[in-house]
Length: 431
Image 1 (cartoon, helix red, strand yellow):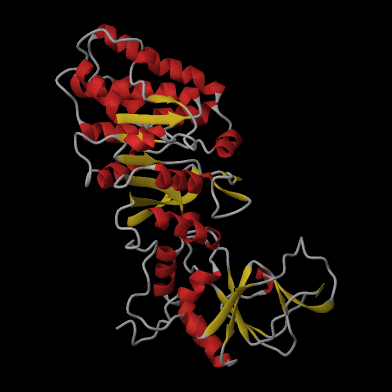
Image 2 (cartoon, rainbow, N blue to C red; image 1 turned 180 degrees about the vertical axis):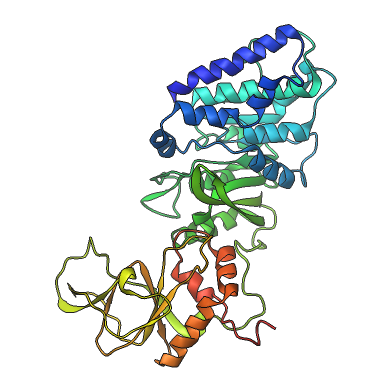
């Protein structure tokens, strides 16, 4: 992130100039620095691939306001805020606006120094974060005297790894964070998964494990953590340490970052075991797809599985005509794993929240056992009837189904667990 240093220097210079001029409110450069300019400067200075590999995507002011609105329900002027991945400080700025200013700049910064805590691995980000908080203080109460060197202001905004920081977690009343979404090998301190996992999952896990009871946590997290099968043990782990008080779907992070996110509000320790659900359930409806079908992921991974075993028809997403019945699969391959005997329904796993239909189905008929690609879900009717398969297509095509999936899972892949939970819509359940 060294190429971002010039912007950090620019913002620090703005603070020094305003300090000498004794004026900050209404200054156009201040407005830019406090609303979107740091993110624009980052995209201009740092290659996209570098941003992706480090997870360096700053929260927007809109997202910061969403966080602040939730935090405001439990915070007051005595609250202490900690951001373990503070970046350019957007969430801390939103918290500073909640805290409000004192009668002059010096007293404001003295109070904020003990109530605004933040760490980040990148020194450039910490410099920008600290300078922006000073600009925010200036914009709230004006400039009333010479400032100490910026390095001495707000000393609790510092360079440190948020995944190892514990001291601040014991001091804070509110943890606010938009952690990196990148995937990394899981740290030894976590036992809820193996292999590569989202850093966002590790950040939240670290916070709920080490923050004191009663600490409020509000986090921006990638949608896969809320609904992905791979993170079900992580969700259970989080609920061992905290209660989930609110889950709000936000949608795409921003127009440059094609990741859907949600905002989770938790309380550490208090009320464990009485959490709100990560997603809304089917309510009073007694029946779901799992009552009529066994659901699994197609077992064939084309580029990994060796072409050995029996020669069988091979069904992939391209050969599964949408909303139709397929009697003959035109492609074949050798496969030694599990084959599926018709009739059954396949559903495309890949979809987007803005698609007209989230779950597109195809009925598979015929007499030969079929090898099914892993990009498809397989729903096998428990009664082995084609009429039950046809009923499932009617359920899948309903607008209520797309609306339900957009609430339940906004990841790019529909999971078997989500399909099993889908309500078995009938005219009687919708009236």
